[in-house]
Image 1 (spheres, rainbow, N blue to C red):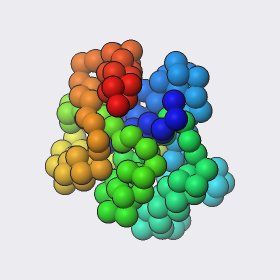
Image 2: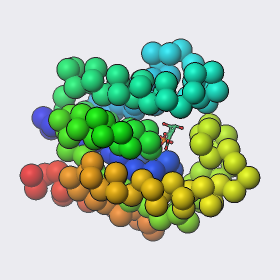
Image 3: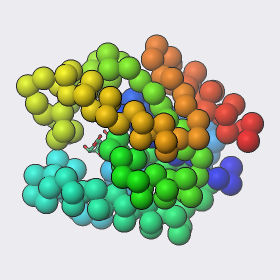
Image 4: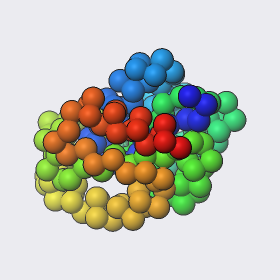
Length: 171
Ligand code: S3P
């Protein structure tokens, strides 16, 4: 695998879970931009949002992509759900590898993330409404960033991985 495979999509769509399993199957490194940022900052995403704010976090995402572009090849990379919203990030993603959008409906997402306290943007009184609102405003951005789309609703991790491999091996 020479090219990077990059998984994008909304929080809870399975980017990290699918990414880890895919990387093990292909025996290649796995990298997650949230983890990269947490390691570099020495603190959790929720702390970064609380102390420095969302814009500072978005700058860290851009810095992360620029760094990876110079040093990461043949890996599976999952990125934070909001990373493709910035245009500059969409351009960097395209340069970095084959971008796949893991598309999930709001119900699937809510089932996966309910009760989670690590995602600052969903700590609201109405997470379901927030998910629908954010998905609606982000959908175009995800589509613009992606080369391929895999619908994940009702599928097992193995089925999703199989689809990703068919897509990326066909190219
Ligand atoms: C965010 C998604 C999170 C994390 C941060 C913001 C977003 O990543 O980067 O909480 O704006 O959608 P995951 O998609 O991995 O949960």
